[in-house]
Length: 230
Length: 102
Image (tube, rainbow over all chains, first blue to last red; front, top):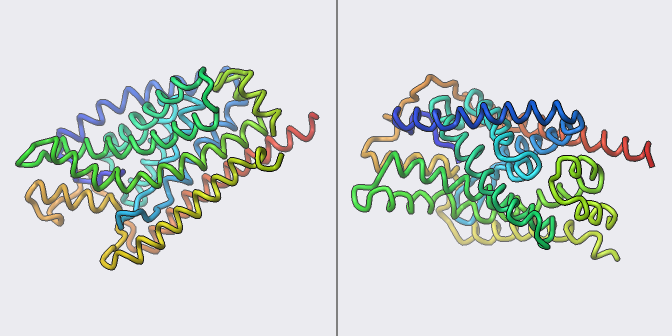
């Protein structure tokens, strides 16, 4: 999902930075508030953030004959919301821009928006709409993670399409083309990522259900039932 | 019941095996597939649309590039290791807490 350094014209680089900064500021404020209210949230933040580090470093081959990597942002988005997630993503993306030449400082804003803001936001929306319903908790986490991953790549496609509209068909036709490169490759990865993160969520429920109850990640009855089940 | 208890684990293992199987199958069908990063493919398509050679895209902000693929993969491994250590540490911490307070 990285846009490579130099591949966004200056005005678009600035545009995405301007969108990203308030999201990050809001995320930092929220993070401080959560940690001040409950120090036991810190280990959970470590787990969800740790998985973003791990999954976003795994470049996996896909059916299109190219490689891509999962994002791992869905779990953090379910537990802490999209804004806190964007702060963790910004750290990972900064590391990758500085040391790996994946992405870059001028395109960091655009990459934060796709991986750290819109992706997690989409996953979070799915999670919020299913949270109180009878839908299985782990299935909800699966969907949220898979959608967060997939949407990240759709946004990357949109960012590139806006900067590089095709001569015939404009933004729409180049968007379709970039979706073909990014999103199709991503479908199998997103499914596997969703399943793996749902499994991780199951282990959190088994080991530390109290923190999920206190953060109101799911209704208490659902968490207790699942924790007692195991 | 065993199935009920380990349902998610079974699904995860099956999904990962399917993923590997699909990769082995499709890669045997596609001779020309290079398995380059989709980031790189996206960039070269953007260059095509802009009508500018890919080499002419200079970084807007000067950037350090890992001198070789070896160094790059080492740094990627480091990133994953940091994540793995934190995850393992926390799961161990929770497990210890749980065993102490029955």
